[in-house]
Length: 250
Image 1 (cartoon, rainbow, N blue to C red):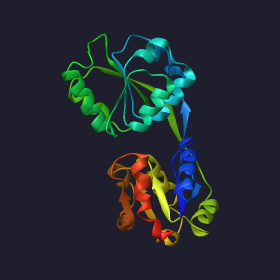
Image 2: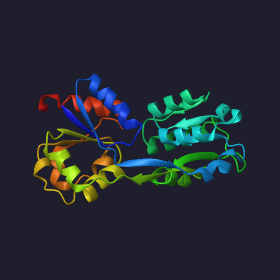
Image 3: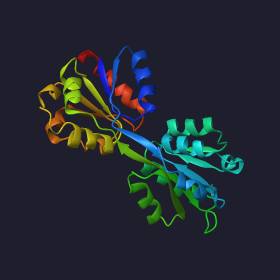
């Protein structure tokens, strides 16, 4: 099956390898790229946080480019899910604590760990959330509601990648992909609201749109609602399991 991959690099190439191993033909169409915010370096090095928090592997990649201090690697790090947790362990963090895959579940774990004494927070020992500039506010809103002391350091920004209308028309009309993998709401919005807004819908009528979460699927226009499907959990493993249930379409 031809499968359109919309996530940014280097994740897109990684996903392409997983798809080929499953017998699919990946078509890479990254919709965004991440760029470093180097001015964040002093904020990362200051103070002694009780724990770090990351909700994307991109945050760890850009942090690694700035360099990890030994004391940072010894500090507990909370990761949103398994893939981000594995990236943290690979980077050298010794105490990685993994959430259930989304920001709401990670906030719930942090709140529970603080209440249970598994992290000791104070005005001098905060959570340090290492994040992208483009992000959902829900995670931070939940921490604020629970009166959890934290600071946010933005370490990377997200830029859109432009494609010509001719290129997109060829992509979706000639040997068009059957399945479209959507990893983020931002990418889904870019795809439908900007890139495909001037293209005839006819080439899209046989596609299925496979989304990482309900939040992502909400950005797909209602006219495609009967062909939008959501992974059982917000991670790539479950997204690819969902893809296999459509293998007869290829």
